[in-house]
Amino acid sequence: MGFGTVSRGGSSRWPDQRLCTVEMGPPCHTSCLSRRKSSSSPKIKVDLDSSTGIAVMKFQSPPVNSLSLDFLTEFCISLEKLEMDRSCRGVVVTSALPKIFSAGLDIMEMYGKSPERCGEFWKAVQEMWLKLYGSNMVTIAAINGSSPAGGCLMALTCDYRIMAENPRYGIGLNETQLGIVAPFWFKDTMVNTVGHRTTELALELGLLYSAPDALRLAWWTSWCRRTRC
Ligand SMILES: CCCCCCCCCCCC/C=C/CC(=O)SCCNC(=O)CCNC(=O)[C@H](O)C(C)(C)COP(=O)(O)OP(=O)(O)OC[C@H]1O[C@@H](n2cnc3c(N)ncnc32)[C@H](O)[C@@H]1OP(=O)(O)O
Image 1 (cartoon, rainbow, N blue to C red):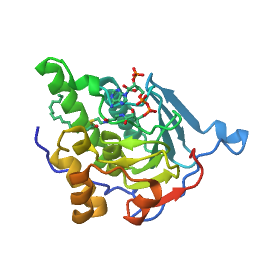
Image 2 (image 1 turned 120 degrees about the vertical axis):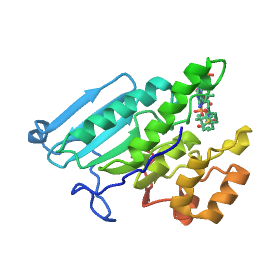
Image 3 (image 1 turned 90 degrees about the horizontal axis):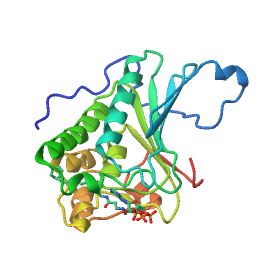
Image 4 (image 1 turned 30 degrees about the vertical axis):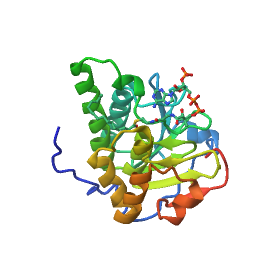
């Protein structure tokens, strides 16, 4: 499947290159509650605070938030709903599971499935990328756990990234280590963030980075010391 032109931003909801302050804690006051809209699908929970215009999308698909067809479909529907809500200006994607942001594409979707199912799955992966990359909202990945391969793609597709520091958490396009080649648009998304040379090295070796190493290579907008964002 080819790609059309992707518009990125371009609406008044997009603050050009400004850093975002993201309130990720519980509501500060009970009066805030009335301005919160929540929705939950089996694999993704969304909380939108209309007073700030910030939505938090939490992945809750144990054991590892793998990107299955169901997960990707729910993700696209949730993002579309937020996109249509004019009170929503930004969305934070993060994980409700301990230690894992997302394990990437669901391996079981790529094994022993019919060509039709494979096509549907691959289209959903591309759809996720197109919707996230082309979003008019400010998109932020709060990476509170490991994020290999497709999980890393999702984070790289956001406008900003914040990662929790924990030596056990790694992020990167490590497909080479798995004996597969990262699709060219995975690679391009990484090039956009960290440049050609770093991407070349990272993909050749299938590297997974810790938060401080990734920060050094300009992956991040920010990082935090708390293990849970
Ligand atoms: C064929 C379809 C498409 C056709 C056209 C396209 C053709 C091109 C295809 C090429 C695709 C190229 C792109 C690939 C991008 C990807 O994302 S590939 C997936 C890469 N991800 C991984 O390899 C992650 C592997 N997992 C881990 O490293 C670890 O599990 C973890 C660090 C995420 C977590 O570690 P830990 O906490 O120790 O948990 P585990 O015990 O390892 O795992 C728990 C549980 O989860 C299962 N699991 C892990 N990862 C995945 C996954 N990606 N998909 C599905 N399931 C996963 C793991 O098996 C365990 O299950 P059990 O408890 O044993 O049942």
